[in-house]
Length: 197
Image (cartoon, rainbow, N blue to C red; front, top):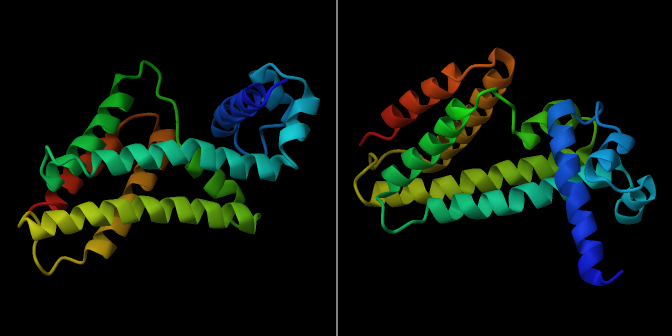
């Protein structure tokens, strides 16, 4: 097996396993279920991952590296005003959920944070780092909005970015609990009010 094939198999296990963990939670997702979803033998799991915790750490990086990159690109699009970038980005996410025939919870980080942030310091630190990176990306865009007169000059962009990031995570939690998009619609309404100059 060449290096590309090994990488492909690892990526497959990470992708399929992250889906299983998102749906069933950390404790509800056994290694056997992860390898069955990936269509690989159980030995392959332990070839690439020292433990289930190690798998979850690598899966977080695999899932959120590209997502944070897309977020950064969307919020740095020079063709749109900073305020429009933010509202459009979250608006598209809300529309995505609204189009689903059956609402499904797609927040891997949310699933892990409730179960494992306190039990696993390594996972807790990785989750916090990802959420902080998301807030940092948003803060940079908010600062551009402020410089362009779209936000009040006395607005604390760091605090606002942290609040919006936390509010979005909370709205996703309500989506899971209520199985409707009301909390997401409320989030969008408040987001637009928050971003008025």
